Image 1 (cartoon, one colour):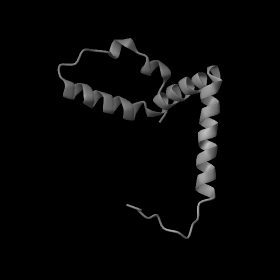
Image 2 (tube, one colour):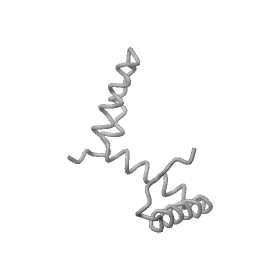
Image 3 (tube, rainbow, N blue to C red):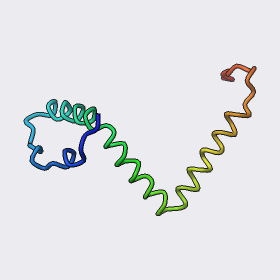
Image 4 (tube, helix red, strand yellow):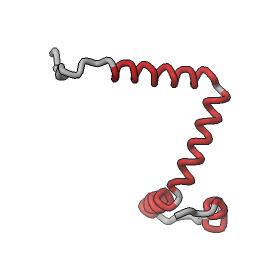
Length: 84
């Protein structure tokens, strides 16, 4: 179910909580309620970060390429063993 962006940024719903347990309960409830909005915000921040710092983007692409290379060209018939 889509939630409006204005509901995420509504400052009238902010209040001080009495205990840490109530705060963690509210964080879990807000995360489940606004999950997609949080993912969009984090994705946008990561995209801007990668575009403004090309070295981190190159590093991420290199990491992904090396992981893919190691995953695709691993021997599939040999089990993993511990040499200790």
